[in-house]
Image (cartoon, rainbow, N blue to C red; front, side, top):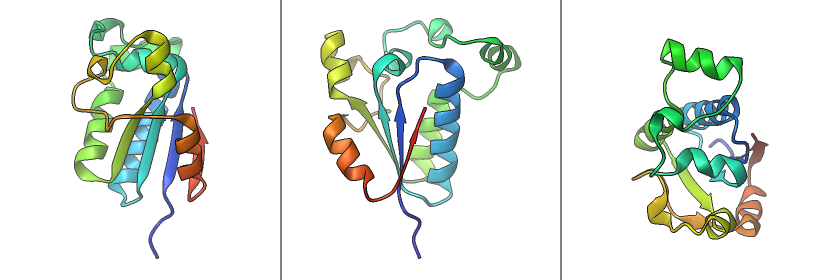
Length: 132
């Protein structure tokens, strides 16, 4: 029996939560579980294609340790999930609108487009929903 889809809503700008959402999404996707990731609120800033990569993430002590120890980057993890599994990544259309961004502003080649919250939540009724 196929796994039910996993829907992840990522709203936090904290590096630790972004990292955990990316790890969860990529592991589930490469484990043959369909995943849909919805990125909104403060989390959208970590996926700004114009941002300085060194300044992309903000967080606490664990964030500092991940950077110092060279933990895999969240964006790289998501790319792996897309390459080796069924991972779809959407930007929140409202978050883009209030920032005055178009989809072209986002990290290149990572997003499948913009989506509204209503549609995401409607889709999520068919699976398991997690928030970070």
